[in-house]
Length: 286
Image 1 (cartoon, helix red, strand yellow):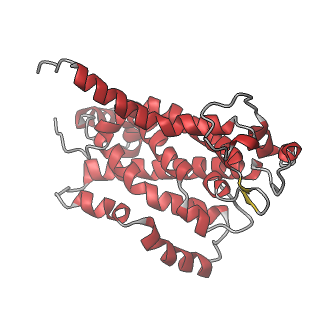
Image 2 (cartoon, one colour):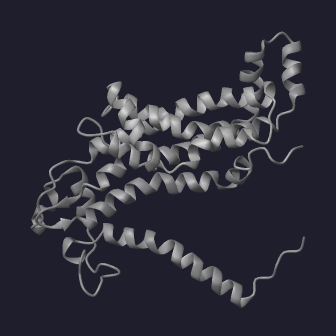
Image 3 (tube, helix red, strand yellow):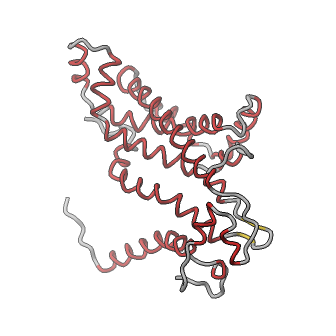
């Protein structure tokens, strides 16, 4: 199929779309290096004349921003960053590990019909707010509220369907014959899947892991309703930068947002070529 020529009108449309897409990122980056005097300036300050890293320092030294006469920042973001890393990484590893064996079962030992994707992914079809209250009730009864165990459990529950079906699409591309050859050589079914199938889909496994990490890293609602004082994540911490004297600390929020976005942007570039294939749900067969 011949490529469509890039006309001036199409180039203009793409340029406008790119500008609209990148503007929020640009604004966050500029706000992160603005001093407090520029946060609410009228007219708005697009690019600060005196950029500063005080907002980034305030994340880990709450008293740093005091030299601008802004107070009320009482807690460091260290716990939130550490909590996000621990919960996201742990939940991702568990979700992908379970998802791999579930994908093997679906691809090799189960009869798949057209309703199977609907059944597996049905949990993701409901808005999080609709299932948050039942989870709060269940976790309260089991004393999992405000614990990393509870937070990791909910992360696994909401990402496992994605992990399973993405990995299944990669397992479907591995010929059964290579696994059968390994079993003829004396390996068990489990050994064949671990020593043959797993290495062959390592690219897909890596892409799925990164995608699931993005979902866990950026999750807000469940982290908010399931945490109080013992645990905290970056999205929850972002909502707490409001003081009685200075109002919303936009610069500090933007600084934390930049730190939160950095791994996601890198991850996004790494997995973009794999996502389309991983999200086809095995619809295209060999």
